[in-house]
Image (cartoon, rainbow, N blue to C red; front, side, top):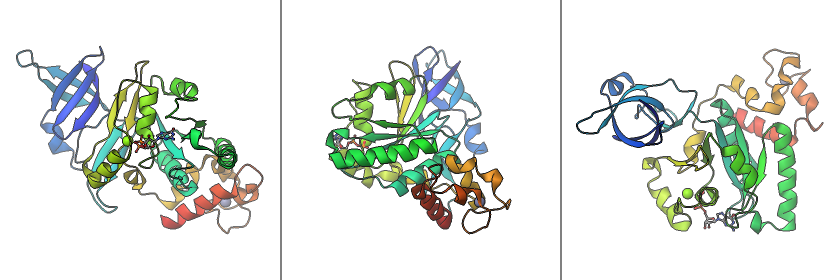
Length: 302
Ligand SMILES: Nc1nc2c(ncn2[C@@H]2O[C@H](COP(=O)(O)OP(=O)(O)O)[C@@H](O)[C@H]2O)c(=O)[nH]1
Ligand SMILES: [Mg+2]
Ligand SMILES: [Zn+2]
């Protein structure tokens, strides 16, 4: 029998069988011994093979299919052991707010680079549009223009009012979707609006609660009635803890990527070199100054 891991909190694993039934499972002992790099050998999003004991009704996971991708969290940057947050993600959505609180473009760009580093396509969801003043609406249009030109689809929604959810709902269908964003951006409220009936806790209390037990909370997977899943991550900080080689960063800026073959020097860092195709494209609309500055700052930090 085969299925999808939808919950994995330490020793308890829940698998959604392909016929829709849900099965509590254990993991065959061999996986714990073989996998020394990860604190959890099986993660939500994993596709697994299992056997069900006819007497007890217990499930035993006997095989984990190879992962298309996965995102990890490390206790510290230097830790050798990591925790797999989720696997086999089809798409990552960053829930962004321009008010209450404001998500910085530096943060957005770091997220997008990290998603690219994990080979996960990404989009931006601007939430809380019900709070936008004319000035914030102008800011949104400016940002949407920059990010859509760079190759990232943008959605503007209000989880609170339930507005403009149609397009977002349709792209989520049938996929495993990651929702990330600062605490308070409205991830849980948005999932509730997309899939009524889930009744996920929202608001200040859960925010404070999550900060305290940040490292011990697990990502949760919510099934959509039209098919597909949303993975709600408790915090975003861990998402940034991937280590990049400097030479890998340019390919994580899709709008820069197409210029890379035309730089005069093969090992161009796109900072100071003559004949740099990326710098030549700066300000032409193809590569925005804002995104290029984020590139410099990420390069500097890695
Ligand atoms: N005005 C407004 N408030 C929202 C919206 N979405 C969420 N909120 C509020 O923002 C706060 C944080 O929401 P929550 O879903 O818990 O954020 P999370 O930490 O990202 O899961 C709550 O008080 C929500 O009621 C929205 O579209 N408009
Ligand atoms: Mg939440
Ligand atoms: Zn260059």
